[in-house]
Image (cartoon, rainbow, N blue to C red):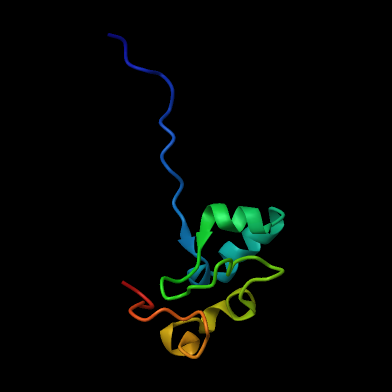
Length: 89
């Protein structure tokens, strides 16, 4: 049996949006960053129960605008906060 010459396409890795560096975010912005792209490539923090936090229109303003401040303590007073999350594993 002949080995396949097609490259394997692993499942894309999703990144926590609040952990992106400024450089990574700038790269995303130059690629016409959209809510659909964010949903496909980034995830919101584990403690965030917002149904669509990365949506620019109806999402979490703090997550989208002040992502470097995002951690459990910062988010703990939010109505969408989920107990038992963690900033970093």
